[in-house]
Structure formats: C-alpha cells, structure tokens
Image 1 (cartoon, helix red, strand yellow):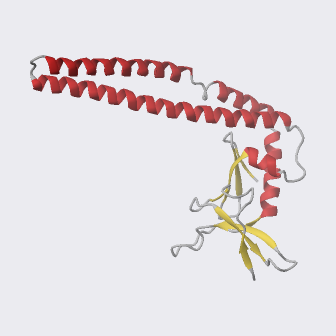
Image 2 (spheres, helix red, strand yellow; image 1 turned 90 degrees about the horizontal axis):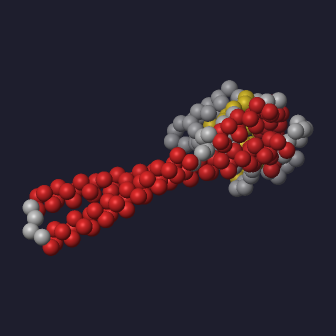
Image 3 (cartoon, one colour; image 1 turned 180 degrees about the vertical axis):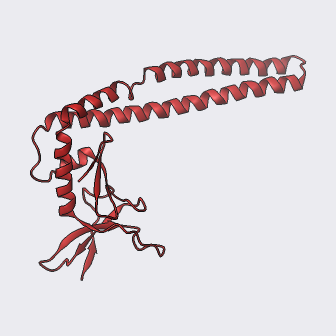
Length: 216
C-alpha cells in the first residue's frame, strides 16, 4: 500500500486527537490506484512507543460531519447570533481596561518624576543613604508593578479585540447563511470551525469559533 504526505489542506491544524491532544496529519492511501483516498490520523499515534486509540478518519467523514454540525447549529441560529452579540458587547468591551490603562500610565509618569527628583536631591544634598535607598527601592517597586500591570492590561485588550473580530465575523456569517448545507463548503469551514476533536470511539466533536460544540 503506497503512502504519501500532503502539506496543505483546509483540515490542517484543525483536527485534534481526543487521546493526546496532538493534531491529525493527512496521508494518501493507494496513491497510484483507483482506490486512492486521503485519511487523517493522529501525528503522535506511533511515536515514543505509545499508540493513541483514536481511529483514522476520511475526508468524506470530516466533510459529512461538518455539514451535519453546521446544519444543527443553524437550527439555533437566532439564539447563537444573540449570544454572540451579547459577548461582543460585554466580554469584548475595553472601556474599563482603557480607564485603568490611563490611570496606570499617569501613575508611571508620577513615579518617574518622583524618582528623578529623589536621585537629584541625593546627589546635591547630604542625606542618609540607607533612607535614600529604602525610598528608591519603594519607588522602583511601585514603578515595576505599574508597568507590569500596563503590559498585562494591553495583553487583555488585544485578546478582547481579537475575540471581537472573530465573533463579529462569525456573527456576520451566521446572519448570511440562512440555508442549510447540502455539500461541503471549504470557505465556510475555515471561517467558522476552531477544531474538530476525534475520540477513540470514532465520535467527532466540532468546536465552532464562538465556543459551541456539536457532535456529529
């Protein structure tokens, strides 16, 4: 049985092993015969002396499963769209983060100025060096804490902005796709699926980018 590997596919980095969490990779069986077909199996299946119990799956099974899962999601279309809009308005909001960022940036400016003056005064006046160092360390600790919080807030904000972009695109897709699928749509798959998890009993659970999970 001849086998070859294919590098690009809409399923790449989307199919996950329910045993070990590794991605599935594609392989072509009977590549030179009329029985040629593409299958997907766990990339970790035969590594390190271990063997995952998840079975291989065919592209047709993936496609049919996605069609079923998507059509099931469409049955909850109005509810899903409503939940996405709520998430965009609440979970993705950045008003409070922007307010705290402004506060922390002002704090950093104040601490920077206080530290500068503290150093200048120490250089021009005779001062107790132990007291000077204690005050300097306190200012430095507060400055470090403030800048670390700023970095954390910026990370949270970027994540929320990314989530908003993803959920907005997903909501737009749901609003446009009123008709059920009767054939596989690669563009739709790429737009709405986060991953498909294959379990040892052959079940495939499709996780959509809004977090909804549907077994098909």
